[in-house]
Length: 455
Image (cartoon, rainbow, N blue to C red; front, side, top):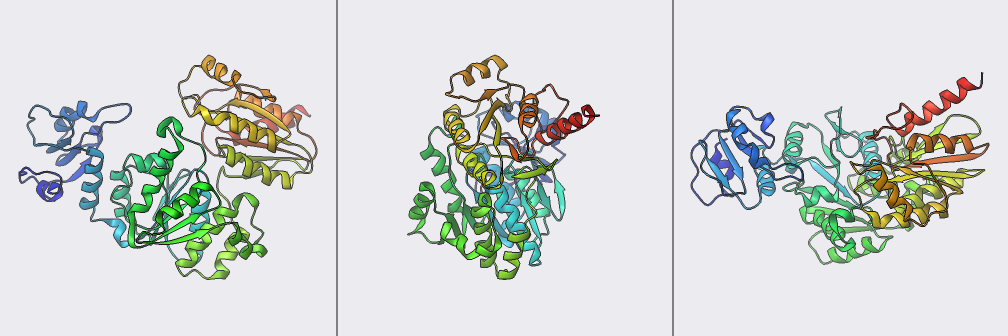
């Protein structure tokens, strides 16, 4: 493809006839004949790597800064993130237009809803790609997930490579705000809920909401908005879209009654109903939908129940907001014959204003609360300790996450449940007392140690 053909809509100046072999945003990945986009990130500035990209074979460069001439064409644009998204869409021939694309946004429930929907559609014979927090799946191949929502260039590239009929993706607020989904055309846009989270990035709940709502601007002309309206923000979104060009499907707890015989777990009701509504719109038979709801295989790190002994049960979940705590702990309370222990922590450098509400949700939903560390993200230990001391908290605080989990398991007895939230299936980033890399490994390590000490 010619440079002029690719960037005609982005530059008012005439462009030279340069044949392109690809697009890159990382200078280390540049191949001869590539077009290099210099993006400004939170950590590094791509403009500093332009010379490196040219040395590696870049035949043209796009950036936002007025720079001195290079030995290859330099095209200055106002927004390089939007420019690379639109260029990638054109270079890969707009792959989302020929697939059924489903975007799921919201604070909680994105991952479980996407897995429910994937099982329903695949049981109906459709091939599905999946992009989300746990993993990416393209053409049946599982790939690691560096971000919940891929960057725009890689996303267009992966869509181009995908031979799947349907693309299901979790759409994060960061992904929307950073234009990672710019140029993607959606058949369904789904809203689960909005709870206090990421305000270190968005500033206010109103800003957070408005960013989430932008997803629905990218629906195809025949696209459908699917909204869970139990909460204030869901109702706000439905009202915002009601006079728009797209069909709006509003769902609430009343819809759960239709699946009364399916015995949906309390914490999965919203997820199952949203997935079922979309599946039915895609002509999936009712019998298939109900079968998946009854036999759902679950999601790694999402209400993952680990039965190690007959008298103690452990749940590992990704919950990291007050509302998510409430949902998970309420589900466990229905199952537990004894006490409910809750182990949770906070991440460094993240929204501190949501922490007190999370503490209160834990105290309301569990019998024993153990506050610990999550990823510090470079925050000094002492700084996190000082932050935690400011909270109104009457439970137990054990900073080392593995020791906190071990304490809860040791104190639990017959009929008790231990709920560990915040990490799900994610790997630890910090080092702790036990030689473990995740919550599930720590639980396994504890029980193996307990068993060996009993002989």
